[in-house]
Length: 178
Image 1 (spheres, rainbow, N blue to C red):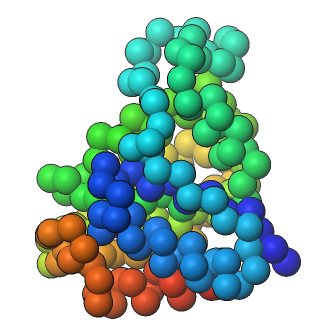
Image 2 (image 1 turned 135 degrees about the vertical axis):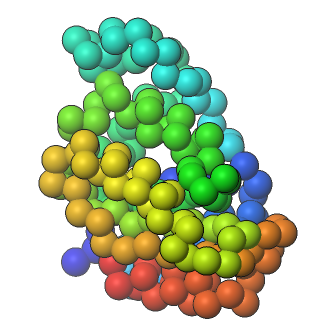
């Protein structure tokens, strides 16, 4: 059965290492017959959460930016892939801002499958667990969220350094297996 897959790439660099891993996941998922859309946060206008609390009553943010459209996409998706470069052993700022801005409708993001994609200069996969735990903290707030897999793109410092890395194949295989 075909699934609707939304890939959120938070790399500030088009063709950056985590972005390339997203492309491989997307190729695999499309090869398997799924409907896939990739969104690059760097191409969207998303302001920081202001913590004003208005959304708690209205389920809408006062900020008028691209996040409203992205919330609709999250709700429509069966599968959500969250991808980040790892900076100082955690999520990049773009991904954290995106997650924070789900507050107006996070209670509506239910029963979704999630995959995580990480790319880092770090060679030690264990050191990337803090980043995965940030994603898991988000999922803990979503009803029925199921973590399905993690792609660890280790040892990729310079742009394009992930090419030839086993994580590229892993991302494609994971996409096929959605």
